[in-house]
Amino acid sequence: MMLQNTMRSVCFLLLMCSWYCFALSACQQNSAIKSTAKKTPNLSLATAKVHAAIGIENYPNESYALYIPKNYSIEHNYPLYLFCDPQGSGAYPVSKYQSLAERYHAIIVGSNNSKNGIDVNICMAYLEHILTDCKSKYAVNDSSINICGFSGGAKVAGFYAFQHPEVHSLICGGAVPSFEQTPMHLPILIFAGKEDMNFTDLLQFKSAADAQASLYHVALLEFDGKHEWPDSSTYEYAFLMNDEGDESRANALRFVQEVERKKYATVLDQLNAYEVSVQLLANKTSTQSLQKFINELSNNSNTTKLRSQKAAQINIEQGMKEYYNAVIGTKDVNWWKMEREKLNHPQSATDLSMCKRVLGFLSLAGYSYSNRYINQNDFINAQKMLDFYKAVDPQNSDQPYLSALMYAKMGDHKKAIIELNDAIDLGFTNKSKIVNEVSFQSFTNETEFKKMMQRIP
Image 1: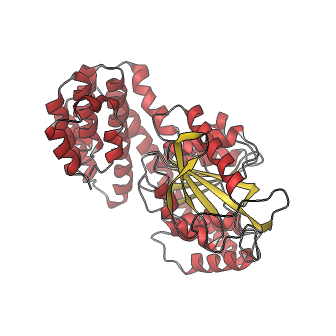
Image 2: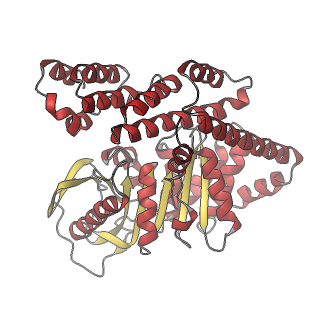
């Protein structure tokens, strides 16, 4: 049986991570803030193109993804958005939000080095190196540096914003920081996927911030999604918040009109979108129609009933998580398989999102415990946790990957390669993760290993 303090640790891991903030201003040739401080070197890179790996002077092993809008001019300074991806894939968020960089005339970059499993202070150094490099090469508005993170990347973003008061805004999703490490008076925007296993933690963070609204400026937007970066139409809220150029009022008005035209699954979804829009855009354009709707429904008996039902469901979910967390390590694989089936087929359709979040919670617990024991070379407990992980999330490619890592550390190369092939069958595509893993280096020249690597696109 696992120690109680080990059991509690997963909750801490799940709570870590999500900071966010409203920012992401914009500037164009006719709306950007003019440079008054420095001469910016001529741009040697192509604009309107995602550059996957820009090297950093004096740090040969570090790089970042970059997108510069097509109308870039060194005569103006542009807001900068620095993205922290938990897997160290800087190009992923940069590619995902390049259309927003164009619309709001911003430079966006993503770290290729900051990722889960690396000490947060080292990750913050990576961010510092990127910002120093960008300020020396591109026309960056120093007063509009915005840090964006998701999941483990949100934790890093939060730490950086907490220690650097010059940061203009913090935008995060998938997790939240502790209140002790939350910067006061900084605009923070949280994106909360309704199927994200950390959804209830994000809501609780927002409630705590609202209780001290004079100190914490937090907005939270719920969206239809899992534990993932939001789509660009959802993420546009972040860019709108700091849009201060000549077009900002027109952009805000257009967005408010789109919010009003959109069809929502529930009244609560509509209220959330309206409330966030008013909170972020009231100083940019008229939001009277949105506020009128909010006022009409806020005290409506049906709305009150729906909110009470949602609060009750959140309490049920928290109880389920606490119970499951307490019995990890005490139940066999078959018991967990039956629980997975129950969660995949809830009695009520309204419970579906909640059950998906709980399954996500169990999956992350499986990953966290397995990875911890493998790193400690405790292969007996590692195997128990890998079996648990497979029982609650059999389609997750990380489970066989971790199994391969365990077998590699045990010196069983054949089983490691078998598990890596299983990971590929389940959709594992991160070739660099395999190549850079020290535990696999001793058998990379084996024929079966080479065949396995050829299967990865």
